Amino acid sequence: MPLPGGYAAAEEGKPVAGDRADFISEPIQPVPGTFDTRAMAAGEPGLPARFTWRGSEYSIDRVLEKWKETSRCRSGADEQYVRKHWFKIRTTGGHEMKIYFDRQPRTTREPTRRWWLYTVSTPKGP
Image (tube, rainbow, N blue to C red; front, side, top):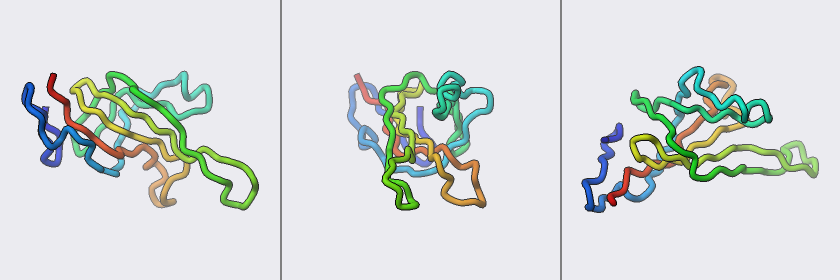
C-alpha cells in the first residue's frame, strides 16, 4: 500500500529505500471516537485507534513501544514534567510509525494540534 507523498511499499523480498525511517514531523488528525479511554482515565493521552495523515486514514494494529519525554520545569523549580508521550506503532497496512502527543501545544493559535507523526517506515518484505 503506497503512502502519501511518494512513499512506496516494498515488493515482496526486495529491500527498498523506505525500509529506513523517514523523518516527517507533521500533525495527524485522530478520528473522533477512537481514543483509548482507559489511558485517558489514568491521566494519559488516549492513543487514537485511527487517524488521518495527508488525506489518508490509518488504523493502528499494534503498539510496539511507548515512552515519555520529560524535562525540567520551565519556571525554574526543581521538578520534572512530562512533555511528550511517544508511541512506536504498526498500522494494519504494515507501516511502522513513531507518533507522539505533545502535552503543551506549540502555538496558541492551533491548540488542538497535539498529535504528531514523527517518522514512518514502509512495510518490510518477509
